Length: 531
Image 1 (cartoon, rainbow, N blue to C red):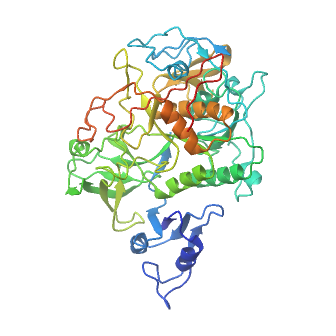
Image 2: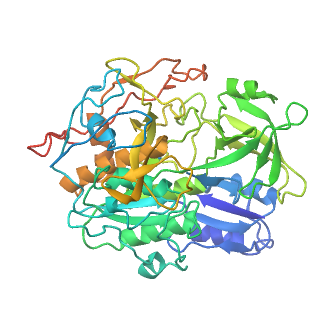
């Protein structure tokens, strides 16, 4: 079956690849199959990840090779869908009227200017930076390219429609509907990053990689490959900012409880495994009930019909992200809407796993595990990027905001931003029953309010665009340090930092109290600390 073999960062890939793909039975190598393993997919500019046709026993053995970071089935996890400007900056659920993205004024204020009110505090968004000279890449469900939000002040579209494969020389062909958005998510996210009304980087160039819920998608791996090649070939000095408001997840079906154990479904919704229980802080549990799972920190995102989405941690996807950051791309990622803790390698919960056994006929065999407190992928791991948690629309008190109850938290979430009831553009091809209103002042286009870490991540990406307009030579590490140094601690933390009380929704579970603050002053660029 198809497995992705991810090698460690400094491994000689050619050496181990030749051993795996060559018959070594005459000179056996420990943990390497003694046959010529078929190669299912090579990635020319990314030798960290290669697809092989392995047996489950061969996959287990390869994991023990010190050069191998992980070996994972290819198809368990699936990506799922984070001048003076006046307007109404309120937090209400109402999606009609001339409401703005209130993140623009919350994140340019050092205090909670809303207090305990959801109404407009009367502030304007004063800005002198607009993302000029920066390229922002929206990896999402596509974009409605003709939406007025993506025009410049002269009415010219800033969406750069390129053929990613022809431009980079990576093998592949562009899907015909790549520059569309039938879901609406990508258009909304792009408008928060770079919309001329709702967004931060009002004059940045916009590039699109469609990977979600669209007939014009390319694979996530192809998107990473063409992006890396495109960025590395740049000669114009323009920084690249990438927003990923999506996460990998897998489905756990609990509809058979209590008679039957929970089942894991693959990307095609087929049942492939039965959940055996958890290993939690070094102790094995055979828990099967929903309450028992929650007591071990396994909440998940409820999508109805007794099915929950759990975060899928993929070493191969994370290695791709690490390569992007190493190349100088500035990355902002939605933390996820699983209501779960994300731990770091030194934490109590980093090695907690869900244990499962593959079903007969699934194409896989034996048992496996999934690390559920490492967060989902894409994940910055130890690289210099942003994993963004969402703030609730409701403030805790007059001084402090609070985490949204759906948002992941924990030490692996390194910054928080406005993510609830956020106004932005939406494509006009979304279902007619979607709550939306006309885009003021153009009645042929649409806007709406959405919730999620999907809305929080583009707030950070937009601020990063502005920072890079002023400092285009800054590295991802310098940008991260600046954002961290300027963040405030105006977030209420109401729970056990060790994560033992997972039911405490207002707990940050040990996350840093970093609320993004971008100190624009209107008449001058801004005051900043060096990093």
